[in-house]
Amino acid sequence: MKIPPVQFARYRFAPSLWPSLAFAMVFPVLLGLGFWQMERAGAKQQLVERRAASELVAPLELQRNMALGIDDRYRPARVRGSYVAGQQWLLDNRVYRGQPGYHVFAAFRIEGDDAPGLLVNRGWVAVGATREFLPALPLPEGPVTLSGRLDSPASVGFVIGEVPLESVEDKVVLQSLDIAGLGAARGMDLLRYALVVDEGQPGGLQYDWSPIPAMGPEKHLGYAVQWFGLAVALLIIYIGVNTHRNGDDRDHHVEA
Image (tube, rainbow, N blue to C red; front, top):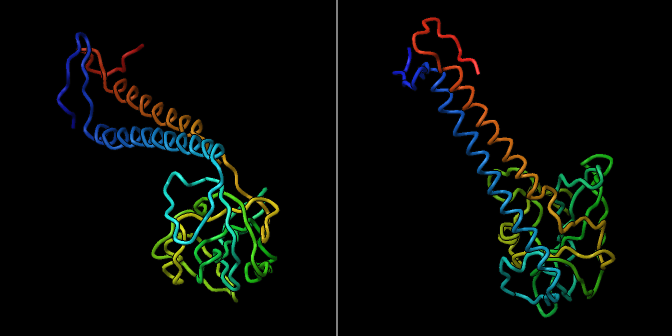
């Protein structure tokens, strides 16, 4: 079965039904993937610029119930208070120099507050011999002053449902960490972003934070070019195999 042909001077474009349906399904997908990568490149460029701008501002003095906006992400910050014993969570599937491990988050009570109001990213720690044995993670006692960067916990794939809390001894292993969701689950009113402590801070572990995204905007642009290139190639093939000379009963392919 063929679609009614279209005449172009000495040539006619007469595509078959099934190849045309396949083309109609695949071609928009390739274009969509290309535009999606373009959007990702734009978002990453904004991310890079926002992180660069954060280097030029003074550290923010964190206070309880402080309203943080999107422009505060990556901003340097300081806080005084104390870690809360027994309130630590391990964000799983974090790789540092090829070794699997966790990002360690701890609840922090800001000075003058009676309840935990901040989540602190202490850094990275390696997985133990097996995942049934978690690393010992002692916390400093008493008041401390911390400096670092405000950021959201790193994304780790797809998560179905609410915040997945899996208790292991007195710690918790998380496959994904949403600050608002964790706060609601544990009855804590947490600031919007976590404080990623700088190297050498009290309670700090292996520093694992970079101001540059792992995949920069140029990689997304490269992927966009690939998807658009595949779309153009598919279009050329589709037109080429379905275009024939007028009067050619054997439907020979037009030679370039």
